Each structure stands twice: as structure tokens, then as C-alpha cells.
Image 1 (tube, each protein chain N blue to C red):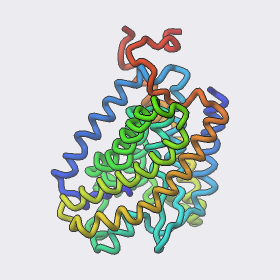
Image 2: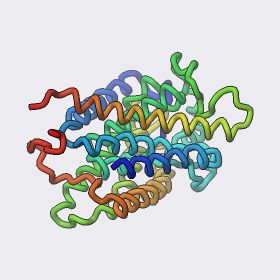
Image 3: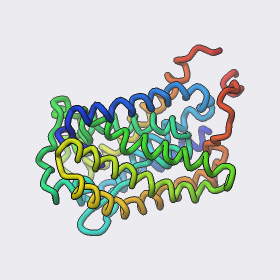
Image 4: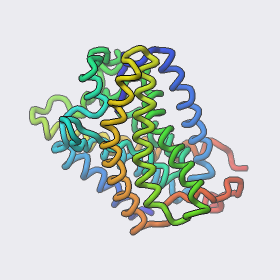
Length: 98
Length: 220
């Protein structure tokens, strides 16, 4: 399992770091429909989100947009892995053994 | 398909958050039974892969792009309930760290991009196991497309019920563009499931595993 985990995580990190900066920047399906049907402007950030660490998948303070996206992808993938792993461990421990 | 805050009426957001929270709660409760110790890292890896793949927008027709949602992939690997949990983890990190998808809309996003697809694919898997027990790839493809369409349909109705946009315009346009995005979802899901089938076929979730049986692997 350790080998699979490391391999699959490496694939995810590779995609998020090296490929995501070259992903399409066109609006996604919902964004397109919102723009076409003139309700994009209804969308807003929650107050908490105004201080989000990396809004729009770009690490702040980095001039190069692709680098900022790649690093955000790297950090995000590791953070999501850790969160998922942590949730799984906690959820399994929550219930005392029968 | 991340709905930001401001698109949904509060009542609609709440009406989505309740079933989403219940399904995620079921996922947490089922983690004990469905996730033997050996498979614990799989939940983290699946979430990480879905997060990464969601960053990879691919162009579709008309100046639009799409990206993987991932509920089908998660449901094939972990079963429908843990898939709800996986998507909740991904979408929560996206909302709080990357300001993608609203906070009051988080329940709706978990419902549209996680719960609906996961339960739909879980149903397909259960229905197929007697007629075609080895149809994992076919379920991955069909389930992925249907999950995207069902999620897009649900998002459209939530927007319509919120009074943001009339149903008769938002439903056909959302379904139209997501019919194409769903093909991308099917391609990526089949590729990822094939990779797991080739390397670790034992990691594919088996719905017929009796849930009441104590999990020996967890006993050490």
C-alpha cells in the first residue's frame, strides 16, 4: 500500500504542480452560463474568503503566474492529502471497538 | 461548477446543506467498516488526486472549459459514502484556502459535485453487480457522465429556485455544456480506474462486502 500511495500521490502532485499552470483558463461550465445569462455579478466572496491564503489557485507574492499556480497546486495537493488522511484516521478511531 | 456565495438564496443553500451534511456524516460513520487500516491512505490519495485533477481545466466547445468533478472515481474506489466524505474534504479546502466555491454554498457544492454523483454511481454499482460483476470500467464511464449531468441539473434547479435565473434558460444551457464536460469526466475517470485496475485491483471498492462483519484487518 505504501508504494501505491507514494506513486499515486506523486502523480497528483506532478499534475497539480507541473500541468495545472498550462490548463485552460477559459471559464468553466457554470461560469460560462453565469456570464451568458448575466448573473455572474451576483457572486461574491464570503468575508472569511477575502483573506484566503491563495485565492484563485495562485500563491500570492509571486510575479510569475504559472509558478504561482504550480506552487499553489503543490501546496493544495499535499494539504488535501493530509486532510483526507487525517479525517480517515480520526473517523476510524471515533468509534470505540465493539 | 463551484457555486460562489450570492448565487443561492439562504433557504436553498440550507436545503442543500442538510442532505449533504447527513451523507458526509454517514461517510464518517462508515469509515470504520468500509476503510480497513490498509486502505486508510487511499482516502487521502483519492482526495489529493481529485484536487489536482480539478485544477486541470480542459477546453470544450464555445470558449468554455471543464474539469473533473471526481465523485465517480471516489465512489468506484471507496464506495458512495466515503466518496461523499472525500469530496467534502476537497471542496472545503478549496473554499477556505483557494476561495473557490462559496462558504454558505458549500453544502450545495458538496451535494452537486459529491453526494449526487457518488450515490448515483453507488446505485449503479449495486445494480450491476448481479448482472455484470466485472463491469467496473463501463460503470466508470457511464456513471461519470451521468454524475456530471445530474450535478449540473441539480445546480441549475438550485439557481432557479433561488430566483437567480429562470429554470427554462439555465437548465438546458447547463445540461448542454455539461454533456461535453461529462465526456471529459468519463475519459479521466476510466483512465484513473484503469490505472488502479492494472496496479492494485484489490483497491476497487466491493459493494457486496457484508457491512456487519467485523473487519479483521483492523484488529491487528
